[in-house]
Image (spheres, one colour):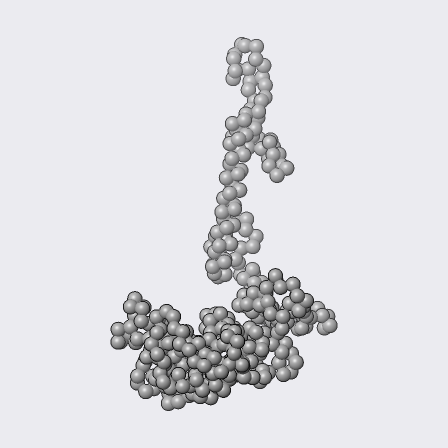
Length: 354
């Protein structure tokens, strides 16, 4: 018998450990009888050997799966290491993985991966513009200087990247503020409460007026989707469905909103011409007195914007527990786009003002 082309069982010389033949002498069968010494295949031993080998293979597979699962959770782990594992999580391999990671950072590949995860390319879009978005723009150190190897902006199924004033193409989250031409939209500056969830209190008059002023200046219509909430010390709790999360929203000092144009289209930061309008609105909010703004790079599905004056409310002693952070963005709030960083710098509010 053989597995994977090797006669591993027939080559064994130990009965019960892979050997598939048994030698019977005359005395083993019928002493004095007519049976001669003979050798025959013992199918029970053969099957036992096969099952033993299969079990061993499954043990190897199980060990490999443990290694894969463990490393997928934390690269610093790797406790499931077999003696035969030639790619164990040893110092040499850790150093090699670190070198690869640094290389991905230096060449910009890591940025491309993160951008693609945030806004996956629509491979169903077969337009020339969409597929030509993958092109060479940065020199590869290991290749001749004329050869480059990264993806240019234009991801997320959009045909066009954000083209800066310097004529370079940028990813939405990497374009600097000074490379954008901010323009007003086609809206009428309308304000609409469209509250959902637990934050259903009206906004502070100062915040509402601030948004109204920005909407008028940027010519967009504003849909307020998340408003004020009851503070914890006044009985607010998720169980009562009268608050959810950040203290910034206490008593209406913060809002989440969406912008629409004159035709009712919701604006998105990943659409270049719409991004210019959204940043125009953010700039007008800042100029009107907003102390914190969040948007872009996957934040609230690239549609929502957070605007608040919570730092003012905390300085006035009306609400508490508000961090000084002035801007944030990204799916988890930790990767703000460059244009927002430029707009809202410095990073933190100060005690007695912006």
